Length: 351
Image 1 (cartoon, one colour):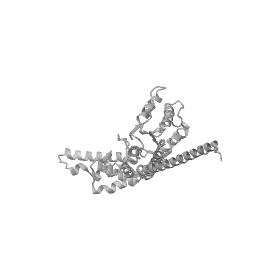
Image 2 (cartoon, helix red, strand yellow):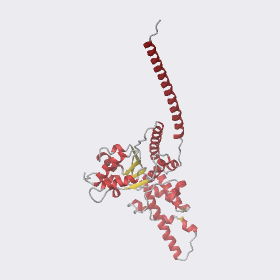
Image 3 (cartoon, one colour):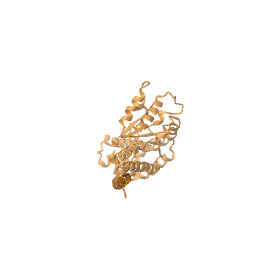
Image 4 (cartoon, one colour):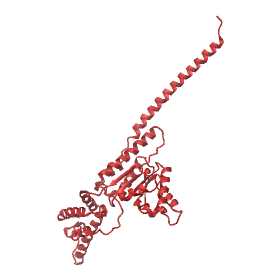
């Protein structure tokens, strides 16, 4: 029977194609298997971190709701970064936040701790904190504000930009030509261009911040997926803050002072108003007591009495005289202290 050369050529060609297809399929199976092994290996490595900076967050006095919400932000950021590294996709995590609440509730301290956590978890390369207000973002002359805002933003790249009293950039009755509007528009563009490279945190009073987000640049609100409210400290937390500050100054209370302190804190808390300054109030309250102590000791020293270490570092009940009235009848005097939050005694030397 004669051999059909065309059929032989066709059969051979089909055989070659089939052989190639099977080889290609086998190669794909091997590559997928290798990729899966590498993926599993990455998952074990990526999700292991538990940095000490997380402990700082846990040991903050009070702020339980804040701790919970910040933990959610961290969880969202860590897991999404892990997923992006496993799939070899670029990490584009918009973790900008808004902190609302009265003064002295620890907003700056929490921002600082978040910066440390983000650095420790490799969410941000530097993890430094740049603080700014309207004055540091708005320029003196027309056309310069965008450049000034960009300069401040660039200094915070790979870290956190914390803008305190952010509501001053746009408020009820604010002119559309106000320089603060230019700051907002510039920030909106910069945050879009640098997603994942800078965490922007806005801070201020709740109602004023709500107005800023609702009525400024339409896209500005969308850049802040996390809004965290800082409630006023309760009486227990205010007393803990007071005792922490005593420890930081190496001071202690005479036995007769403990009940006086509790009574004072209770009355101050019950008479608080919209201007209540929380931790800053505690700082002012303590400074007034210490001033009374210093007057008392100076009078003793002037009369020829030698002062002991016990005298120098012990507060007595007489030092609390006339202090409470200053914090109920009118607002306490302003004291030049940094707007830090308050941590447990184990972290007292961390700042």
